[in-house]
Length: 302
Image 1 (tube, helix red, strand yellow):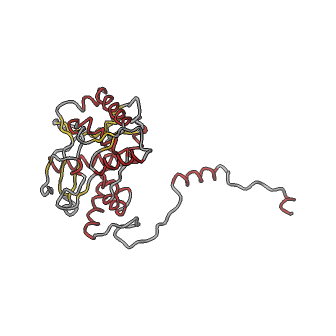
Image 2: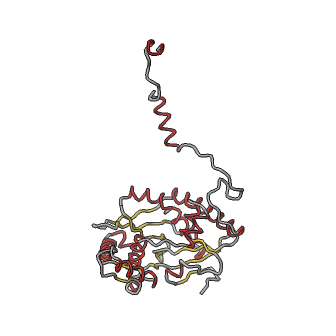
Image 3: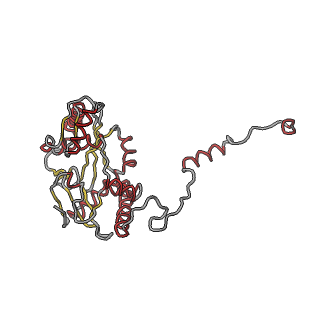
């Protein structure tokens, strides 16, 4: 089924992540690539979706926590300790080819541990308690850029409409570490994107956006973070840029690599030192570190 009308749909994640609209569509993930990299990188990843174990662990955790009724039919257990042998690798590849998430016993233990921590954390427990909808796929038309399709799939939407929440598995649940991850992975863009598409689709703007962050290593620590308004504001600016680039590329049927100005001919970049290096050089220069050593008169004469 091709989506031809804006709205909220129930569908498996595999369908959502496919070309499920009657025209090209842009998701939060695509917007982050377009804003942080270039159209050529977006096009490549769109045509060659990456398969990584860390993504599979995240997807399996989402299923077990948010859609447990779909978990068993979505995973393929691999009765091996690891993927070092050709037999284990073949089993893993066959599972992926059949549309399943391959899981080793240690990975199942890891996912069970994360789920237990989330359900025992008081804040996450509240966010995941009754009265919410999960994994609803939303589709809308961009009112500013050519009416292109935009979409999102929030993890958690309470019926109170006060907030949206997303589950993240991470190597470090420390709030300071996650602050860096917000920048590195564009999570502020994701928060802004979801609030915007939900508003286009349902007509209301969620006040807050939370990430339920769980560490992938024992003891599977859990942190809940709210993305502040300043971060979301920058996310909105970056998303608008991405939407405009997406529409431009579709209109011109062109997906260029890095350019100083996208809509102009390719040109060389003027590249200098990063700002931190300039500051460091300036400091060391002012402290006299770059002055040559003094020379005695007889040395100079020689």
